[in-house]
Length: 529
Image 1 (tube, rainbow, N blue to C red):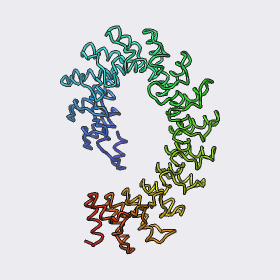
Image 2 (cartoon, one colour):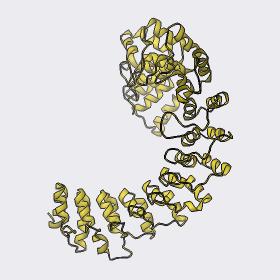
Image 3 (cartoon, one colour):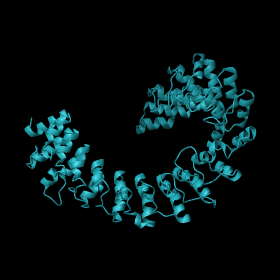
Image 4 (tube, rainbow, N blue to C red):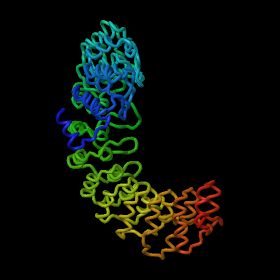
């Protein structure tokens, strides 16, 4: 506490009411009193999730802190908070604080009804108590507080399923034998799935023996996929070593045709990938329903260790494409992983300018993803910066349309590209940025030198339909951009009322689309009023 006072008084340690919530987690009552009494921090304040100090006290089971908050600070216990709007009993049962719960019941009986209140997932405190696995707490809530052990939440989780999550086998047996609970083996949500999801092999084996579960065919073979998804390598090894699962089977829960290895790569589970690929029957070349390979999925999870293992230990081809024509390098650029992009280009130089089914190179995809570091790297490797995709866009057009000023500056200020370059429809970067409403880019382009054409042509260049950047801004209703471009027109003596191929002026387009403010902006720029 002395250290906190010193930091506050001598180093202007910033204090907010959220600080008090953090201190509650420490259970230091003397420090809580200091912040409340001397620094007047409000204990009723909510954090970003809506949690208050009483919820924090319930999480850590701090009885003395709760008593102070209620008696000295006037805090209410019936408030809900957190992502799922849980009350103090939800938080305390979730953490197994039996004495804390009994304290509230004995000293504040008016709040006992909260034991029977649900959160946003329809979970009751009894569900949380079962998930925690504290038998004394569970039996107290059922026997003495008459909590309903038959209920289930929105996820179809029952008390038995929650107990399966806890790993407490004695609690499972108690719920079945003493409270006659159905273990719910084959429901939408099931106890075997819960056990595998958190890696409780002993629970799974007990359920198998007790209820004669056929592990391999259970729910069409879903159990290894759950173990893989939740990164439970011990449980996965148990399943594959002890039961005759097909390691190359596809996920029965969806139509992606993903194998265990696909899922492990996509989730970035290194240990599971190493285990699966060590098995001789594992097919490392399998594809998903969209043609993705383990290389694509490793790039998607941004896992360089997995990618390196697959390439260097299994000699997989880095130029392989999925059914959209995307190679691993395209996925890496899309996900923004510079380290993986570098690795791929170093080991597969042909990937540098490889196009997908839409004509997009790694550079163009990096531009769509607004990733300047990757763009700098690709440019340093002398990639083709003038190539157009199937929509007639190059890196400058994509950046202008997407609002990426930093990328435009890199290419235009570095004289890699001209600011007046047109796309497949004759549209300049100025046109595209004006159309999309990117004022900062419009201002930058208007101030940029034109390397190939007189400045007047850069500003007034029309597309294939005769529309200029001013037409585009008026049509889309961007009054600030209209004012900016119109100002440039006046300084260059360009006719603001130029017509397109349909003989429409910018003013016509603004009025026809109902953009009143844009009309006013254009008239003001014209008349000066």
